[in-house]
Structure formats: C-alpha cells, structure tokens
Image 1 (cartoon, rainbow, N blue to C red):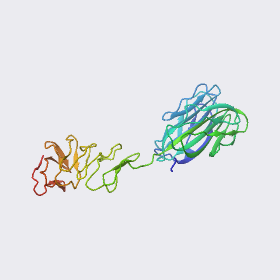
Image 2 (cartoon, rainbow, N blue to C red):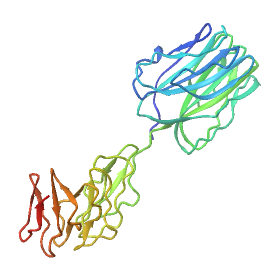
Image 3 (cartoon, rainbow, N blue to C red):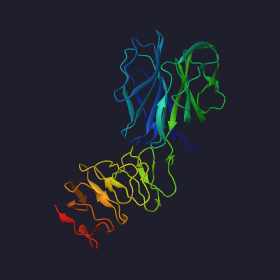
Image 4 (cartoon, rainbow, N blue to C red):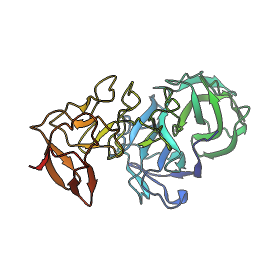
Length: 345
C-alpha cells in the first residue's frame, strides 16, 4: 500500500501585517509537489486575502483571529506563500508541509474547522469523497498560546509554534472511509479550532476487468493506456496510438478478424467482425491494419476512402476471398500473390 510522502515539515512565526510565510525550510520545491500551510493570524481587522496561486481549503474568522489551511500544486522553486493582505500588526503562527510530486492525487477537508473552549481540541469526524489511502494531517490552533502536550492517538511527527496564539499539526497514514482524529491535549483551557486535511494517494494501476484469454486487451492506468503483452492470436484490440487515456478495447472481436487503431483517434471495428468481412467503416479516420490479417479478410470496405498505410496514402479495395491481404514493406504497399486491387491514391 502506498501513501503520499512528506518530504519536509516546518513551523514558525511571522511578525507584522501583510505576512509572507516562508517556505525555505521545506527544501527545494519541484513542480508537482503539494504545498500545505496551516496559519493562525492574530486579531486581523478583516479576514486576510489568500495569496495568489493558493487555494483556501479550510477557514474560520472571529473578532480575535483568523485560521486557514491553504494548498497549491507547486510550479517549482517556491520560497514563500506570497503576501496575505491584512491590516493587523499581530504575529502569524504557522505549520507547513511539502508532499512529494507523484505520490499524491488530491486534497480535501471540511470547509470550516471545529471550534470549542477546553484543554482538548477535537476535530469533528470527516468523510472523504470515497474510501482510499490517505495522508492525514490533524491541525489545532488556540488563543492563549497553550502548548500542545499530547497529540491525537495514532498521530506522530507533531510540530507547533506558540506566540500570542498556538498553531500545531501532526500526521499519520491510513486506508479509511472516514477519519475521526481524536483530541489534542493543551497545557491550559483555551478557545481553539481543530480540523483534519486528507491527501489522497496516487491511484494504482489495475488491469481491465474484461480482459480475456485469447483476445486483445488493454489496461488503463491513471495517466495512460498500454496494450496487454501477448495479445491473443487472430484477434486484436483497438487503442489510441498516442496513449491518451480513456481508450478501451473494441468489444467482441471474433477469431480470425483483426482490430485497427487510429493515429488521430479511436477507430471502432464492426461488432462481431468475422473472417471474410470488412474490418472498419470509418473512412474519415487514419486507419492502419494490424499485421497478420487472415486470408479472406479485407482491411477496408470503402474503396474510395484514403487509407493511411505507413507513409503513403492508398485507395484500397477489398481482396477477393481466398487471397491474402496486401502487406506493408518499407512504407510501400506490396500486393500478395493473386491480389491486384491496390493502387496508389
């Protein structure tokens, strides 16, 4: 089971109004890294404006404070969040994370944190869009600078900074359908907020459920499509030549038939294609026959359509029953014995 990987964690404090939270302690940021910042602003006149390029995940504002969780998929080279526009001169405490590119898929959390007043900040249970493998980050802020003395059960790697306010977070990985973080313990009773951030792992590659022995098949990963090795004899599978996602194998190709793929898009063979029939009826697409088409079949039924064969266009007519299909040799169309109905377009 794989989970999102934390490359670095940090915590600190920025003084003065319009803070620009530093990211330098997270190390070198590369394109595709996930950056997460948990921030608590002291007594802002109005809720601070989220810096450009960042997405606000969770926030709550009162007359005494503003708490926020923001994130971004890094462009690479980031060293700070950019300015949070707010009029307060009070300090801002924060924790921050860098998640390795390629290990995470998405991020989610409640629109607003839980709030209360006690020695046990406790986020409400949160249910993600679907069950999966997650990096879970529990967050806490309190308004009397009460230090965290105990972390939620199962959570580790706690980081915190106290000034006028306290900001703290900890993390764990788990496969789950809902997350009930449990309580932090703080040194004295205080007004607090608590929340959870769930970062989903990159989707795993899995085989197509309908792959069958003896037929051509394909499997879909999160990013691409690849043919199954050793596609069965006498049949083939349709797929997009450029590997774009979403292509599927053509259904119900019969033994003795062949499939086709299009360089400009998916070309679908006739359902139930059988020996002795035409393979494809899409003259508008660039069509190539799979090598080894059985005798008695034809690559295309439409004699007027230009069929792309290698680097040369040809007008192809169906071969007579019992003859072999023309083969492609060195980008030239060469007719098999007894086949004389291929001519240059």
